[in-house]
Length: 108
Image (tube, rainbow, N blue to C red; front, side, top):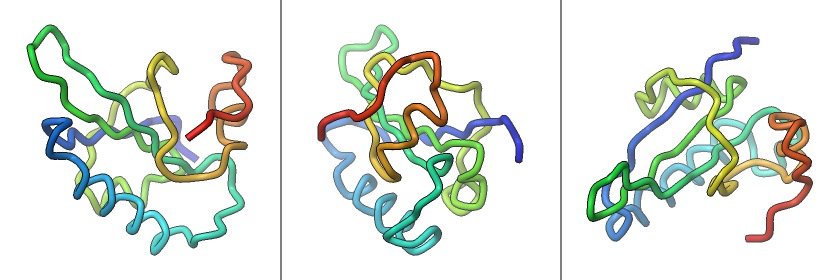
């Protein structure tokens, strides 16, 4: 297992719904709908980086490297949990991937 995370910029938040839907579908195809591994997950966050409009960025865990390759995601550092939402994976991913955060289940 690698400790490198991956990120994919999905663009303007107002236009990212189709890209988010594709990521969820690809996750199901790649890892199965009932994926039981808490270390395989995709997270998203709206980020503005000082700009007027925010963009949606997806973060794929290290064990989701196969999917990261399929979507041409770039390597990155582990994201902060601030503003991070689970897009695909099990809720058990929070303590598995971010044990120091104390997060257990994030409501949808």
